[in-house]
Image 1 (tube, rainbow, N blue to C red):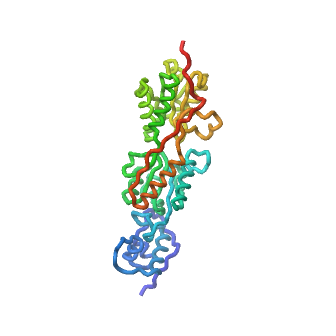
Image 2 (image 1 turned 45 degrees about the horizontal axis):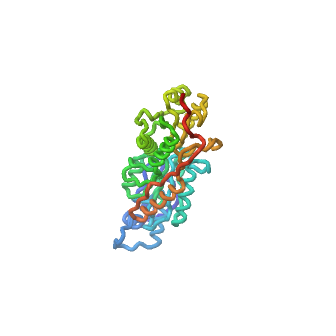
Image 3 (image 1 turned 120 degrees about the horizontal axis):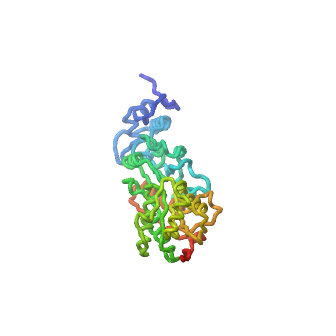
Length: 365
């Protein structure tokens, strides 16, 4: 009889790209594939062979050695939850700087996870900016956790859809209705933007323009919707002519373009916040190059927070995104999904922020 093999830290065959299969686990553990299935994919209430603890441990060691995780997965290697929640960011590097716009999200995530009794696993494979996240099974490693929270404006839809179809609990931080089946939490950008427009109108502005990046992310769509609804609510001109959308606002927002708008009667500009801050940087640069005074000649409002490297400048009129609250809400939703419960988190309200960059419009001759 062939001697039983003992699992070890045997490296994967050179060039292998496929996920390890149960058959490989069985060969390494020296047991049948049926035994592996009973250990790694137990069915609740199933009756049959009793697996000894020694055999179970041998299978588990083999699975860990090969990096095998069962589907629908990451629920737990032996039908027991790990009490681990994953966090995956599609930014160029995982945000750890306290000035990074994602850092407050992580503060809320960590606090709520601790309160609910979960540990966090930070997946740093997005250090290339998420470029490799679209290849098949690129997100497979998140299955080591009981569920995973994803952050970022641009996400690989196919990979997230595959996780959801496998029954793996997924929550996206930031409302993403186009990701069918993916639960998400988000801020109420529509109502917050409406309020900013209303405040500017109360100050006397009658021509207001939105400056945004050329991006179909739902956060951008929501801000534009709130902007246009805000104009309509106060009876001001709206429509696409009131929106400047640019793929490169730092280059296309020139002093000449800005002067043309102000000569045409525009007295206030509302700008969306994005990860790059390109629209806000572009507008600030154009205002300075044109020699305009803010808020004497033009009023500016930012729909979110300024980039960290501009923190020394006056905090602009706009609204604050409740990042810690959003992080906490995302963890609550993910924990509920891990527990197999139906749950919903309402949109989180953004708070209006008065600032020195807006005031009454200049008097016209």
